[in-house]
Image (tube, rainbow over all chains, first blue to last red; front, side):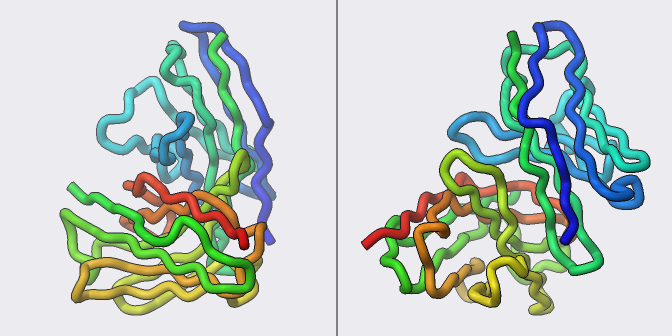
Length: 108
Length: 119
């Protein structure tokens, strides 16, 4: 089955840019979606279809997807961005949803 | 604005069937605009998709759950449900229900409900 690989953790200072990657075989041919999950809360969609933002999500959150890597970029990182981030795709070879293992973003 | 709320027992015994319901408000379970899904998260671990259903009755489920999953809708209660049979401790998790404009992604999510499998 299809596998998405994320680094377990990323650390960044406030005001800097965080880059969170999601690797998968030819993931660039799929639509990648990203969720933010703060402790004790349900996940929240922050980017869908590689680079679109739902209403209410700041422009600081952006996404890209090419080749074997999809990327979530958070500019001007704030303390409130500290959370777990998950990438997700639809695997049409088996008609099912696949999540990456998640990346914990720590704001120093 | 679409809102979802999970309900069901917080504890299930091993080998029994886990049953959860997701009540939907702000939208219709029969709408062609949404897919309805269940995602779970074992304590301290990542997200695992369980199943998705569309108003047509089309369903999709995680093959790793080996046909233990049943997802269904209840139009009279504007809700959808999950049944997971033959549960073990590995099925202990927070279970989230969620909606999606496509089968592809989920927004919004319910707040989640913890189900513990224990005798």
